[in-house]
Length: 186
Image (cartoon, rainbow, N blue to C red; front, side):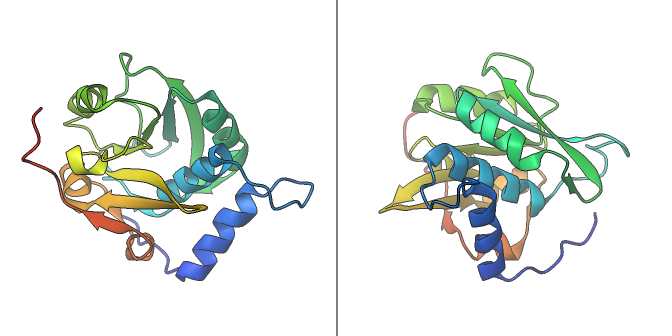
């Protein structure tokens, strides 16, 4: 796997802010733009096994149930590369083919649908992200959530390990680390 460059946390946050600020210069940033910036940075600071991505394959960022996030993510990654790979954004369905996704963001799922989605990609090297409360605790890789007026994220390291993805320490330093809730009914 390629080495991940060291980027100080303040620089990472500044990059996210620059990506999501409207071109007018006003500091009004919506949740969709913030989510897109977080997903882009997840792609930048995560490594996938070489066997998962053929040499010239793009890094696929899939979005379920959120056309606005897909739109802003497409704009954020346009013309950019991660570790030499092109980035592509695809709107997906929770019931559709997800095997080509390296980052999979699903919005607005309830716990049952979240578990079904996680089961669908269980054996794949997919970094799963959602805005569903407790998503990381039930086996997703990351949950995005609002804390006051700031968007934050929680990461489940066990889920990342199972998915065979490696998240950089710089990104993990900004995350809340959660453990899976094995006591809840499935």
